[in-house]
Image (cartoon, rainbow, N blue to C red; front, top):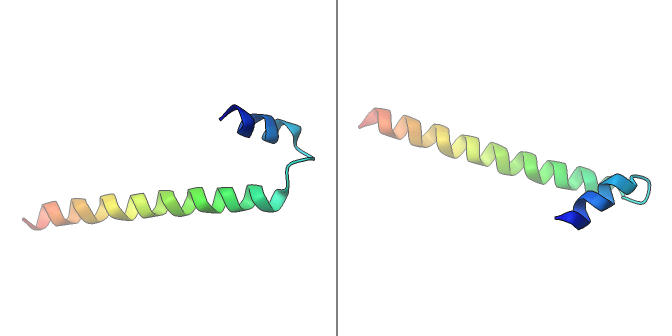
Length: 47
């Protein structure tokens, strides 16, 4: 985890495409989790 923060703090050495890919991956994981929780809430209400 410390390597990650060092890379981000360097800034210019850190490739922007890699940063955008990481952000996109995090956003997809977050949306998948949100969809999963919403579905489980709906399923509980149906019972």
